Amino acid sequence: MTKKVALIVASSIIGVVLIFHFLIFTEQIPYDKVWAGKVNSVEEMKSFEVLAILINTFILIVFFMKFKLLQKEKENKTIDLLIWIFAVFFALNTIGNLFSKSMTEFIVGTFLTLTLSVLSIVIAKKKKTATKYYDM
Image 1 (cartoon, one colour):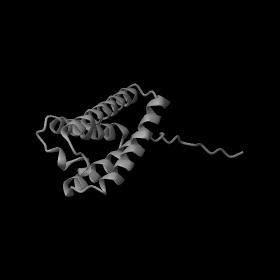
Image 2: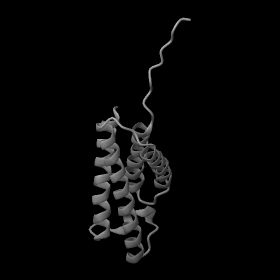
Image 3: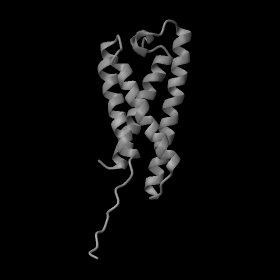
Image 4: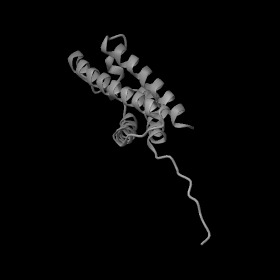
């Protein structure tokens, strides 16, 4: 899988996740079905959702910046470092989803965060350079 394809897939997933969080924030989806069932009030849910929306928007912006860098065939170590941090974040989130009280969150959340972790690794890893061996 190329980095560009991984970015498109990861950005699409993050876009769907953003819509999902907006639906929770607007109470179209009951908040007791998410956040591992640990949210106890609407106020608490709103705080969690604002944070989730901001984080996912930031991730989407970084992915967009990486996509633009790939188009220009340029690299940026800060962007790559952030994407490695995302990979770790998604891996930790995968572990958190394994402890969810909601079977839907357990299955879907675990699948999505594990997929995003793997995609982030594909996006962030360095391009292998060909080494030449010369006889001396």
